[in-house]
Amino acid sequence: MTDTSPLQIVCPTCGTINRVPAHKLNDRPLCGKCQSALLNGRPIEATTDQSFRRFIDKSGLPVVVDFWAPWCGPCRQFAPVFSQVAAEMATRATFIKLDTQANPTAAANYQIRSIPTLMLFYGGREVARLSGALPKAQFQQWLYQQQPFLTR
Image 1: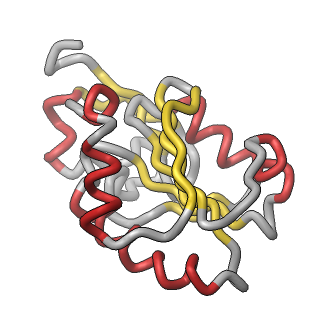
Image 2 (image 1 turned 135 degrees about the vertical axis):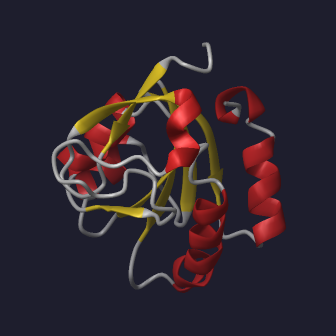
Image 3 (image 1 turned 90 degrees about the vertical axis):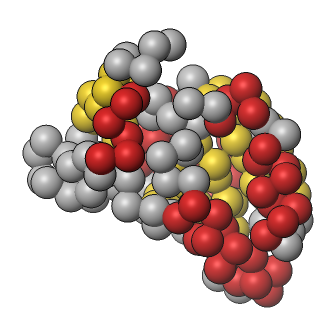
């Protein structure tokens, strides 16, 4: 992919698919429909199984998903780490949080057996998975091991 190739970026606010040239990812692109920031550096809360699938299937960036639940202590402990890394890697991947209690179909479809479970998707397919809460350095190391998918 050349640096000027457009990527599809799903708006975290309205769900519209936007085409953004790769070399403009650092320019704080806005949604063409609602004018919200496309890459705001915050994890996106997938509120439905359908919105979750839209990000997985349509995003031109790799998608890092945190499968979690509000009653899960390790999930709540890991949340700030996930948010910090999402802010640091905002132009390299989309970070999504999926509440498995509110979205049991997605959790079942991906055979989530323990939480938190982290998954990396690229091109609509799962490319990596890891279960358990991690310290920031280990989470970053796991992501960097997925370099072919995170390099832009």
